[in-house]
Amino acid sequence: MRTIEKTDEYLKAHGIMPSYQRIRVFDYLHNNRNHPTVDSIYKELVGDIPSLSKTTVYNTLRLFNEKGIILIINIEDNESRFDADISNHGHFKCKECGEIFDFDLGKDDLHILKLEEFSIDEQHVYLKGRCPKCK
Amino acid sequence: MRTIEKTDEYLKAHGIMPSYQRIRVFDYLHNNRNHPTVDSIYKELVGDIPSLSKTTVYNTLRLFNEKGIILIINIEDNESRFDADISNHGHFKCKECGEIFDFDLGKDDLHILKLEEFSIDEQHVYLKGRCPKCK
DNA sequence: TATAAATTTGTAATGATTACAAAGTTGTAA
DNA sequence: TTACAACTTTGTAATCATTACAAATTTATA
Image 1 (cartoon, chains in turn purple, brown, cyan, red):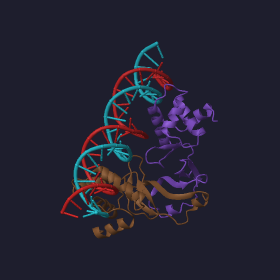
Image 2 (spheres, protein in one colour; image 1 turned 90 degrees about the vertical axis):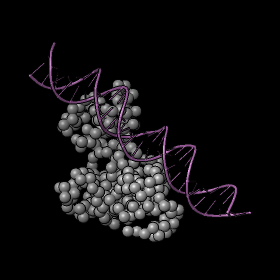
Image 3 (cartoon, helix red, strand yellow; image 1 turned 30 degrees about the vertical axis):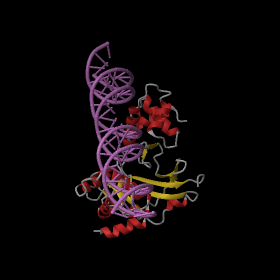
Image 4 (cartoon, chains in turn red, blue, yellow, cyan; image 1 turned 45 degrees about the vertical axis):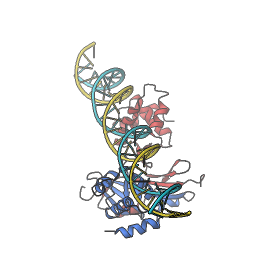
């Protein structure tokens, strides 16, 4: 479990003022790698922070993404998911159980060779199918 | 320009009853490879088909996707786009001009090697950045 | 302490998508 | 041809994630 002190420094180092709500949202993402939605983050935290507003969760996640400390995962068309793991990796969603799995992306990035004239900021790789358990 | 007769046969061959609306929606997608949204498809066709309903466009596109003759592109989080090119390719969106470019995907699919236990139905690769013109 | 700036909060608006039922169309069998 | 069933289209209303906005609260600064 990441301590409050460490998150405090981490947010400051990325130009984010470490308010209590922001620290709690980041800690939740850091400790829960199951790619939660806004709603699940809110529902989990509002028990501890009764005053918490869903708008604050939205604002906070947008800020985190702008500052580059989280990724937004749009593997579903109706709801965004969030990931504190900002390393270069892809996501697999099982159509049966709904779970989302991480997987490494080769460093080769063959397709980028064909896009030399383009400058690439973001890369999203989404796979869908059945996981080993559901197959 | 694809003729109505050819589209008629193509839809039938994929188990889709070729109504006039379905033919027109498919022809539009086939002839316009700029990854249109529901709204732009609707706005374009309703001039020719005054009775057209946006619900029909939604229903038609969902059916086409279920039958495997179009792809749904969710490179944007707020609106889906549609593509009659069902070959294995990725999409690049320019953050400046908004245009979406196609690019080939290597057949190697390195990352899939690490997912041998998973069965993969769909693969989506979305890149974002600046296109050559806007860079 | 006082004041300005930043953050949080609740409510209302937005907008894409879906649900649903009525109306219209097409196919089929007698 | 006619009647009936199945399918398709249409319009309206509902859904639901997200955003806009302004008031309230908290924090930073002088």
